Image 1 (cartoon, rainbow, N blue to C red):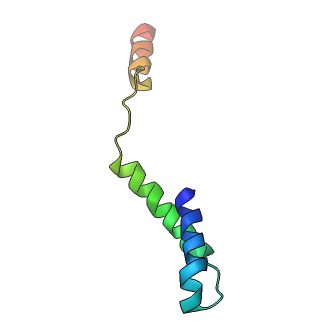
Image 2: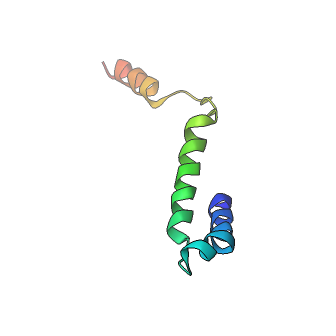
Length: 65
């Protein structure tokens, strides 16, 4: 969200002089999406500390048999 806000403010300050009085909303949304994708793929994600559902389902099926 901060990246979109900074992009929008920068667009209004510098790019509106070059391009004209257009809104930088689309550019801000695009920047926000790219930053979110980069953060998702580049930053380390914590490993889950609980059992997965697959293991729990396997135990349930063994009990039923």
